[in-house]
Image 1 (tube, rainbow, N blue to C red):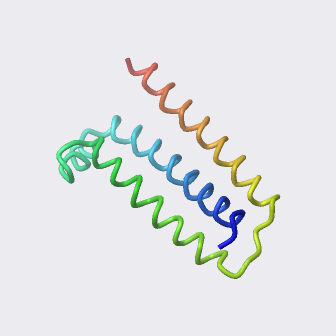
Image 2 (cartoon, one colour):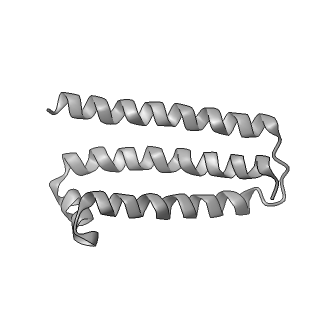
Image 3 (tube, helix red, strand yellow):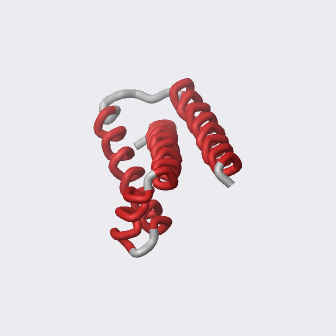
Length: 104
């Protein structure tokens, strides 16, 4: 696999994972039942979210790899995926920060 395709796959997978974990974090704080379910899986909701992060990233990376297996990924697509990762990271951080500031 060429480096640009690896950058693309990794960035897309990380973006999706970060956004989903941010939503799971806020949802778990709003729903005690959901938080208890996460806690029930591993003993602590943080540990469960950590395992979910690994699983979501791996599944997403595999799906992205299979989707673009026979496609050529150039610098433009690699850069766009990095831009998406930066945006998702900032948006997810802002979401979690705003949520906890508002609810503290």
